[in-house]
Length: 277
Image (cartoon, rainbow, N blue to C red; front, side, top):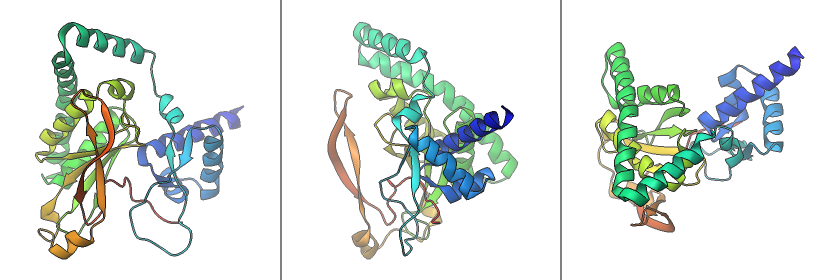
């Protein structure tokens, strides 16, 4: 029985790690969890068979290598649902009632108030981390924010993108969202969270994808132009791959039509950079 319990606990560690680092390969997971690649692949196969994870079919950032790229995994909707609580339905009903009785502005105000409480805890953690590090730069603050978010249950991480270019930045990713089910119907929570990140980091940030919007991770781009080589040249802009941002309709719903196209030397919409096996 002990072996069965250990196996189940290790499988749950693998599942949570996929949520935190997705899209992620078996080799990266093996290194992070201190397991052999063969053991990780066994758990990944079981999780995939159970419908909790799936192979990522989107583009993967990082260096292109010859041969078939390593398989990368993300949580499925079912995998995300395992974090759902019985209070989600009550919360949605309460917010619908608030919207009906007091209007959409009341829902927005409620979302701002809820996120403000989270922001205060995150800001305290980031300030403490900055003081300990003795350095108050964006990389330090973003890394500290990711750790603080993980403590709050958001399974967050931060990685650099576009280094050495005029569009250098950091990518803040959240593999889990405690209010995902609520935010699906009320995107005001995502908007309030994005504003909070900007205030904590002291720069304008760009939300590129959300779990509530159907993506596998929430992705926020934090520009760090000072880390690059200055404004991008005409050649850099011309060769940069485009990315498309989803639009939000005036009624607050999700619009599936593509939004304005922006250009970047490194595509910030791609989630995590993973290693090749």
